[in-house]
Every structure is written in C-alpha cells, then in structure tokens.
Length: 256
Ligand SMILES: [Zn+2]
Image (cartoon, rainbow, N blue to C red; front, top):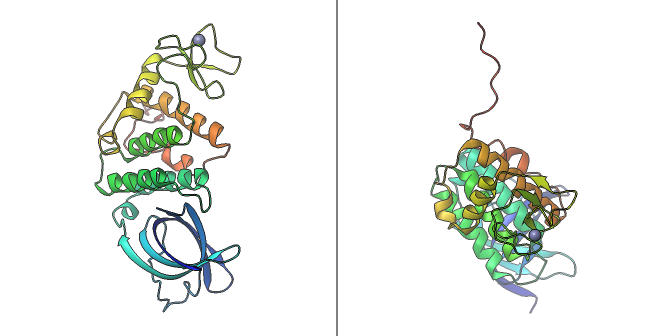
C-alpha cells in the first residue's frame, strides 16, 4: 500500500528547489514523517497555508523510498491564536522543536503526538504564562522519552530531598554525598517548583507564578537538562527564556 492516510502536526517546513517544500510532520500513527509538498510555494498551490508549522492536518501521503509525498492535506485545527502572539509563538516553537528532536521517523509514538496536541491546545486557550506551559510540556516530554528528572529524592542514592545540588548528567537533584564535580548549587525552592511544574496538567501550568528568582533558576536547570539528554542545542530556548515579556529584568540605574 504505497498510499496512506494520517493525521499529524506540522513541525517544520524547509524549501526544496523552486516551488516545493519538505514538511516534517509528527503523525499520530506513523511517528515522524518527512514528505515533499510539491508546488506548495506557487501562489496558486492547492496546499495554501495548510502545511505551516503548528497546523494539525489530516493527510493523504504517498510512500517513497526516502521521502514521502503529500498528495492531500486538510486542516483539522489551524491553531491560529498560537501564531498571533510572540509569547505563544515562543512556547509553540519550543514544543515542536523538542518533539522533532525526540521523535523517530516512521516509529509510532501516540503519546508524544497527544502531548504535542495537548500542548498546542493549552496555548490556544491563551494562558497567562505560555512559557510555563512550554516548560511543563518539556518536563513531560523528558519523562516520556526515558529521561525523567529526579526532582525530589537524590537521583543517585534515593535519599529524600529537597537537595541543594543539581546535575543533568547525574539525573537531577543530588544530595551532598553523591554530588559530582559538575553539579551546581541550587535553591531547594527552585527544585521544588520544577517538580510541581512537572506534575501539573498542561492546562494549569500557565497560571502558576513563582517568585522570579525561583523561576529563573528552575528554567536554567530544566533547559540544561533538556539539552544534555536530547544531546542537542535547542534554538527556541533563546526566545523562550525572554518570556514572559513582563518578567522583571535588570534595569539601568535610574538617572538622578
Ligand atoms: Zn545521594
């Protein structure tokens, strides 16, 4: 059966030749799929904007030897709200980039698909703090991918926390006896906040507002942990780290 039907979320699209694009889609039943959308960059393309990143689409694909070909695409949900606000875009880009990094081509991963769909739906509801939703999503994606961070007990010996050291390489928070040379000192409150965020539902995460220093420290731990275990730099973190725009940031000294 060279033709197959799938639904999925567009992760990214890159130009190919004069008029085509290669679209990367996280599908519900076939894992990550890379497919050519022919003629998509022509003004009168039958695909229109249906294969833009974040779009949830229903597809008809033709299986090829290395790349598949999209023959039909219908929008299930365009997630237009997510595209309309910088904070939501930053959170959405982090979600699709992380999903792209952990998904395997043509390897079914329904849980990952549902996590991404749930993440985008939570963003579409315009949460107060979209970056916190993306960070909650990252914690869940780590657990789903086998890199569950230890945020209560010591990652090495299991001693009950909270502990004041954190090491991505050792698996999370570590006690004083187990901490390796690369472990960093952290505030136990920041570890506890990150643990709460990891347990929260995606739809709730955007309403959790910790004190700014706790948030900043928790983010540094989470981002470092993600990049260490996914073995990749996350390009979207640069923008995500600046959200929310209203967060206190260093101010130049007031002129007297
Ligand atoms: Zn220990």
